[in-house]
Image (cartoon, rainbow, N blue to C red; front, side, top):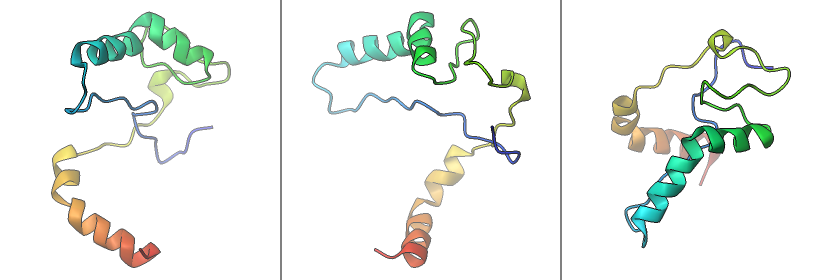
Length: 93
């Protein structure tokens, strides 16, 4: 079910934009999403919850049995322009 080479750790990305008109509401929403109650909602939608107190969907392997691909955010940020140029070279504009 999961690739042997590994998976990313982000399955349900969420962010608060600096242009938000209501940062307190946005923070409350993100806090809810990562709470046990929010993660139970994710489970009900078939996602793999990150919260250790919430069970996994039927048929999913144990969390510690899933290989996670490492990610160097600083390296990714530093190579952004080169990565975009390479993507364009391969797939066109």
